[in-house]
Structure formats: structure tokens, C-alpha cells
Length: 596
Image (cartoon, rainbow, N blue to C red; front, top):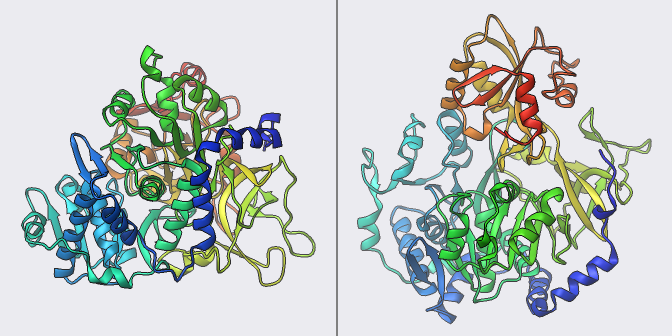
């Protein structure tokens, strides 16, 4: 890993400047600190109770905006209660799972609120999944009922076989499905009695993550961890007030939207402005439409906005703060300066992680700090494992160096894990610094910046991140293996200049010639757009380890550089077909004219 530049290390003077600029919002920071200090796993606090409190204290304050509609806290809370009543009538109770397969619209938030008020769990299904992957996600969580939006009919139909009972919202309901609208019209809007029995340590969501191996895993999010995220990321980081409006166009099946964004809003009693999807050309129009003062981002969103032609209206908005992750150090200052954004609350976290970091002092080029126990330890990139010394224990890296981020698992910072116990155990490291201790392996390489701050560097293992999504290589390898003529497929991520994350690349061993157009069509039908490899490398045979695992280290290092790769290289220059990679293609990529 490259050594840290002077601007990558945190200086005390920068922390002091950040603290001084944040003086007006210090009471909100202190509120977050108090929330973290006093919240207990067995507390009666919950998401539903928080929503109820806002509805009682500020009933007429706007809670949710979507396109041209606005719901007050009283209206939104009543809607959630009616949905809870409908679900109760369908037999949903504490501990039951309801799968939510609906694209970004207000129903998702109202349904989630209704589900968790009953003490049930919302399984937030990725509506881009299809077929086997979607079946796998449903099997992991064993939902008793599925709430499906008509816009997701194609995805639902691809599941096939046995499915849970369906509550359908919209036209053209499949046979046997119950229509939501008439049931909702007759439902009661009083607070569910079950709300009184919900405690912080109960699960509220299942968030699907590809993790580091194979198909998606379902990580457990408890009310306790959600409330800690609200306090740490929202109140200590973003520091919204009740008059703020946060715009979020990220998918609600992501924790960035459901936990970070919604948590920041509910922590302040502010307004959540929901967008259907991200559009670089319409983004600032949406910001102005909703009179937003904050928004949530992923790194690629920021780059898309920065790559658009500058206009006189780039600062014609009311946004003072943003929160998100993946804002690359090399574009941080340019993004902040061009759009006149005062506060960037970059954070680090993962759906299954027991800790989070947040840039609470408005320092550039950092994922922030964390007051809870963590360590950055030496890592063996070839073995993709943390290094242990002769005594069997790990060693922390020096300030400025890069290593594997691990976080201590304790009663105060529990690891909720996945629905699969084996997958949960695989994420834990034991006897790290002392006999019997236990630490969570984030699977991420970070730089220790000093003053308890870190900077994200890269992901390790089989999963890589592209277009803001985690890509599981085994899923892509399975899709490639289903194409006639491909005998072996090894998938990995490679760096592209001026692009966040890693682009997909596949080393293929063929039994004949390659039909680039047919392969492109096949992958478009089998995978989400972000998971389709951009580059191919045709090899006579693949290298394996002694345990028959594919060797990817050299493949990742060589990438798509024709000067280092003797095998034929192909590129998916357009969605229509893979074509042989030429010098002109490579030159255009390095000029930043193409990023797939």
C-alpha cells in the first residue's frame, strides 16, 4: 500500500478548527454522545417508540416528502399503525419476518415502521435481484409474509417455486395474493399494543450483504444498533436540527438510506425527502424542489455530480451538510468547493459491523473517528489474512500505515451477525491480542491516520465494490459458468483511473472461440448491471493453490494493462458486446473518457 501523504494524517490543529466551526451545533453533538453513553441493549427504546414520540410532540411537523406529497409526523405515524394492523390480521407478530420487495417510495418506510412496531423484522430485499439469488435471499430469512410492489412483478415472478403469502400493492396482483389497498382502508390507526413490549436488543431489519464469500448474506440489525447509528452518525456527525430536510435517493434496502439517513432525520425530528432513484442531471433540481439542507451520498454519486459541466447554479441550493461514505480523497476538496458544502460527514461502517466511524470534526480526507475499541493490524495481502507474530498475536500498524481494520466484540459493542451462524463465526477473530478476546474482521484495509481516525483504502477477499454496490465474485463466476464454451471463470476487481471501487474482470478458459455479443446478452439477463464484468482475459488454464483455490493476487495486480498481460484482453466497451481491447481503448480509459 502507498504511504500516507501529509494530508492523510490527522493533525491536532485540524481537529481544533473543525471543533470551532461546529460550536453552533455542539448541543446536538452532546445529545449524540449522551445517547451513546446511556443506551443499553435491554432498553425499552425502539424505532417505533421514537416515531410515536415525534407524532405526539410535533404532530404537524413534516416527516416525509416524496415528489409533490408531504406527510406530517402524525399522518405518517398513523399510516404505519394501519399497516401494523393489516399485518397483525395476517398473523404477523413478534419475531416474524416480513420480506419487503418494493422500489423507493414512501410505502417502504411506512411498512418498515409498521413491521417493527409489532416486534417483527423487515427483510429488506434488493429489488435488483432475480431468480436464484432472490430465492436464496428469501430462504435465508424465511419470511412469513412478503410485501411486494407491482413495480417488482418481474423480480417476484423470477423466484418461482414455493413463496410466502403475498401482500400486493398495485395492479395486476398474481393469483392468491392479497391486495393491500382495501385492507389498509379498513385498518385501525391506533398505536399497536405490541409496541410496549419491543426492546432495543430485538432485531428490526435484515439487510442483505454479499460479504466476502458467495451469495448474499442477511445481516441482523437490531433497534439497539440502529439507535446507536442514529446517535453516532446522525447526531454526532451530521447534527441536523428539526427544521432541516435531508434528501435521499439511495435505495432503501441499503443501510445508508434506512439507518444512516432515516436515523439522522428521526434523531432530530427533521424531514426525510425521498427520491425514487439517483439522476445526475436532475439531482440539484430535486434538492431545490424539496428545499433540502442535507443529503446522503456514496462516493460514486459525488463523482458523477462533479463530472457534469459546471453551471452558475452549482451553489444555488440550501445544502450545508452531507453524510455518506466513499468520497475519494482526490476529489474531496474539489467537490466541497464547487458545490459550496460546508460540512462533509464521511463515515465508515458495514451492515454487519458492530462499530462505525464518522467525520464529526469536518476534517477532509478521512472516514472519521470512533470512540469505541478498534485496531488496524498488519495484513498479508498474498494470503489475504492478518499477520500473527511468533507469539501468535497480531500487531497494530504504525500511524500513517495501512492494515486490516478489526473491532472489539463486547457486551457494549455486540456483533449481531447474520442469520447463518457459520457465516457469523467466519467474521470473528479470536485470541487477537490476549487469550480469549474476540474481534470482528471488517474485511477492509484502512489507513491509521492518528487521533483515532481512519481512511478507507480497499476491500479484501473475493468481494469488491463497484457503482456503490458489493459484487460477489462467486455469483458472477456462476453466471459465466452457465454460458456455453466457458470451462473456467475467475472473477476479481481491478482499478480504473479516476473511478471509485473496482471494475469487474474475468479470466476465462474457453473450449472454443468467444462470441462477445452473445456473452454480453447472457450476462445482462443473469446479473445486475453493476455486477457484469467490464474486462475479460482469455487464458489457456487457470492457476490454483494447493487446495485448488484460484490464485487472484497476480491477476488483480496485472489488471487490464496490455504491457503486463500476454493473454488476449477483451472489453465490454458498449452494452451490446465484448470486443478485443485495443490501444485506443486503453488510452481513452486513462484519459477518463470511459468508466464502463
